[in-house]
Image (cartoon, rainbow, N blue to C red; front, side):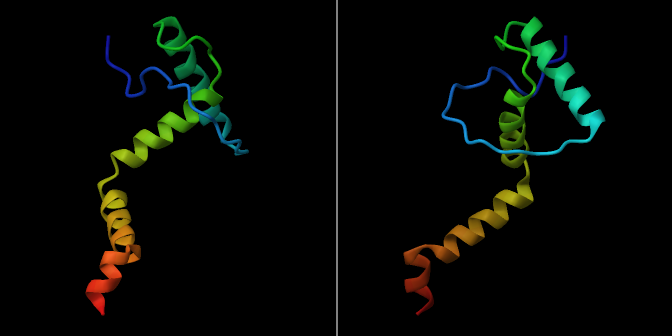
Length: 85
């Protein structure tokens, strides 16, 4: 069986966020949650529990985002500001 990109869901303090998803995305998210539940990786088939880990995984594997974020963080750091003076 192929390995899913999202594994077990960490129990973390959530932040509430309201989003609107296309129906097709919601159906796929629901199916994904059900598969994780069947495999025993998740105790519930609640698709809302997958949104955070999926977004985190997407951002963690987006090279351009990581590179640009590092540049922003370096420009905002006190050591970077001292170097530019």
